[in-house]
Image (tube, rainbow, N blue to C red; front, side):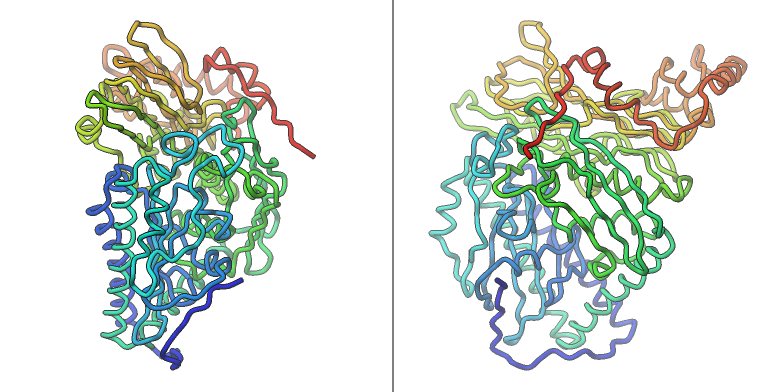
Length: 619
């Protein structure tokens, strides 16, 4: 199957020479159009996940479906390869089903809008965007059921369908879809915003083609892709070895009592091409933590990470994809078999970035190796009926500590995705029966190091109405590891203080947790791992962190620093550092905080939770 583009103008676009100034003008105009897509979306969407946090991913692609500007890489070829139908001017496609579009999106909450851009009867480009809908129907509010064992439990599945046919909205199709969600008004507005953003990009593409000619516009996009390929080709030759490197990290648990789950990757270069092989990754999970990883999406992860580490001035697009070979065994956590559940895939997605950082940095640990901390994207769901008997439903993404890096400390309380922002506390308190009593970094939660890991966040949510909550989080069992002598970061935890004064520790993945008015949830996220020898950190920097409430006097001892009466005791610090250095032995490249067996043995004491059971897999 493959999509068929219907063009009324048979004249083919021609490759032409384009001068450098024109290329720069068109490139920056396309970048601006991509930013304008976000601006249109944020101003017209309704749900806080999109409107306030920016959980959306836009792109503009050439007529072949290769992203020229954007954020997540192109998912268009995954769709066109799976769509058995025609596309004409005015058509707009909607889908959300990973199994129907080759994992162009990876769970049902992400609604994907694709617009083939036509000019004078010819197909000249694509605009597309997907956004996370706060609800998609299914077993639980928020549509991310932890204990789902099949995708049919996760809400409405939308196959690739024409939302608009030749410019006409298919209202019956839309109403059928919205009939299956708990927040139809939010979904309607968010979907309209996605369409408006894509139409805005299509308009800008037409304006550029009209100004410079269709051939110049098309050729410039090809030049932008070629520039990226040349730059990435040099990076691959410089930083990817022919001898394989291998690294593994672990997803803590599946929310149903089993874990951890291993994600294993081997990387090497053959000629000009880099190979990533995920052989050795555990089989798919029983629950929804599977991540159906599209190979092109992983290429995007690799390109984005590498470009940002090596040279952020390189334009990020899909031009280099031919230089990357991704091999993911079927039936594993990263390529589960239909109809496996997928809604909780964020945790495995986050691990991919940590694994990439390890693989790319192992060969140059002082220049390129990050610690762990791009590990997760914790979610909180709160729903019920307020005092006016009106339904409310909150979906919010939390932030943790970013890892220590060769260039400096990790940022405190930041998102896995650089473009995400927090939902303002004032917004939450205005629209939901909830009060934010604390919003602060957790001192000492970032791993100690020459460059410390970013601290996690502690957010205290006071529930003002009876209802139910769900939590999606990870890094509660396995630590965000440190590197080059740095310490691991603190793990995440969730503590509920009931209105009657009783306390309980909640699992990192739980749902249908009943709450009463007055209950208080401490939602604590992980800290990033430390980078480099903590005993080489300037004592004054440690003192500065203490004064900013990012570290404590007791925590300063992890750096071998003694602080007395608000000042560094230089003699005591020198003595302590000398003692600690003599006792520690060889500095490891990676510090995981112990083996899986050791971590499990200490689990109950350190986390207040029983360790998960080692997964058993069907043969």
